[in-house]
Length: 274
Image 1 (spheres, rainbow, N blue to C red):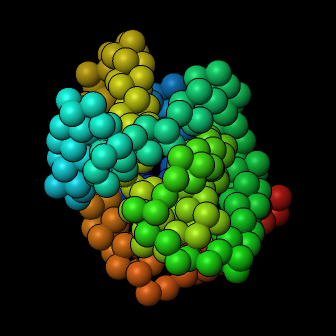
Image 2 (cartoon, rainbow, N blue to C red):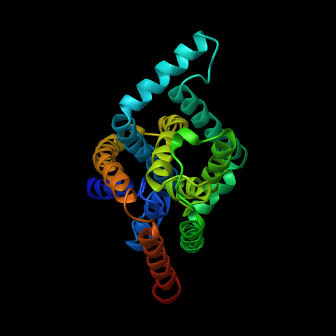
């Protein structure tokens, strides 16, 4: 993997991690379309480590919220009233929403990883998930704030996040759609989606770092990793800000149509050109 490829993939990660179009699909399909050849073990670890860049972006963007949540959780626990404040309650809801994907990811990791080698399947999943966005956009009431969320809401959105283990679904598409299905406003659903991404991305990044160190001569990959990390962080920060503003006024339908177009293009490429 050279510097140019790393930069391109870092920008792609930053753009697509938070937009509901699937960063995993793009990080797999773009090298496939351009016939870039990487060692599969290094490529998988690199893809996950790029998420550390976007993880940094979401932590920086929501830093004040995270500090408020942490302080409230500690304060309310010490007062033996763990759900007393809105912030601490939100913290516990994020933990509940993280559980389904964490359990399923640990139990079935090797099966989901195997799908990363199947571009045609990933393109098909892009299409299927697009229609899920169409459905929730038309049936969702979009009237509720985060403060009105219940444990059931958090668990259902958490189960939606587990669907994102299939490459091509998109974690943000799955969780925002889950929030819309439960009646959250689009911007509120996106905010909760971004906050709940932090624990799962931290865990994935820690595992990927461990896997990277186990690769022979991993130090030779550090310049490329560093460039990709920086690009993903900077572009990811801008992507969060833009999407929150966009969803405050508009629907996710444009992203569903993009998924259809990109998915169909990849399938045409696979069956008629490649």
